[in-house]
Image 1 (cartoon, rainbow, N blue to C red):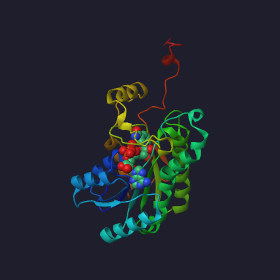
Image 2 (tube, rainbow, N blue to C red):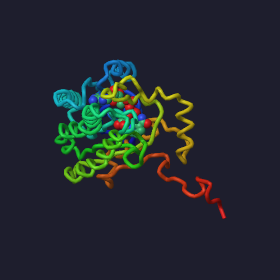
Image 3 (cartoon, rainbow, N blue to C red):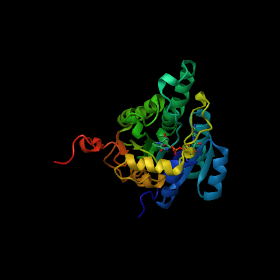
Image 4 (cartoon, rainbow, N blue to C red):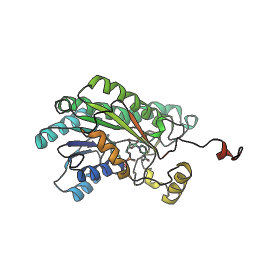
Length: 274
Ligand SMILES: NC(=O)c1ccc[n+]([C@@H]2O[C@H](COP(=O)([O-])OP(=O)(O)OC[C@H]3O[C@@H](n4cnc5c(N)ncnc54)[C@H](O)[C@@H]3O)[C@@H](O)[C@H]2O)c1
């Protein structure tokens, strides 16, 4: 028996990076899938890869009318939903606060919080009744940036911290039937996470970072050394999305290659082994 046999799963932001890796893994684990994605060109690629096997819904997860249409499409095709997985996001460009023109701050705040926070709250509200009927699950995406400085700038970091808090509150409100958790990755390959429009950086993508330099810097940072693929995170998400999880709710699973488990004395060279 596979982990997601009998589970209908909706992934928001499944057009590339993490969400796409999760979709591939979930399908192999027996899930019936729906993907909601904003970018038309990515939907065309999804169609080429998955054909009619996966329900593809074009839409913006921060817009209620798009979500209502998505809900109708999911229920029409599958008649149920067992898990909602949030995987969309936008980055803030890692720009220090002092370097952000003050007049851009409100728009930057709105853009980051809209996609990274409202975009996780709204779908939960729209699908909570069907998730409740099926003893369902919600799995959202935080980041190591919620736990340590410099995983992004102030705005990205604040949105990822908000995810840690909101899963606690949602888990409380939706217990005992719906389990709500999140995963906090450090970094992964094949991401197209984009920069903020509010700073004119929407053309920047994480995939623009030269791959070798990215892999090398991550090796130095992470005790486990490898730069993971999105699929490497998928077993965690699959477990949290499945009814096999009877023991976790309100939790954010730090899956950060040991990045936060920093060496202190010997790493600085101040104290060697005695
Ligand atoms: N890239 C990393 O190294 C990293 C590390 C930690 C956490 N994360 C988080 O993982 C998640 C996935 O990031 P990724 O790197 O896979 O990015 P990505 O850009 O490759 O994938 C996100 C997808 O979401 C879509 N999307 C964006 N806004 C949307 C909206 N409003 N409605 C519907 N779809 C929308 C994008 O078009 C894209 O296809 C994000 O929440 C990100 O913050 C990423």
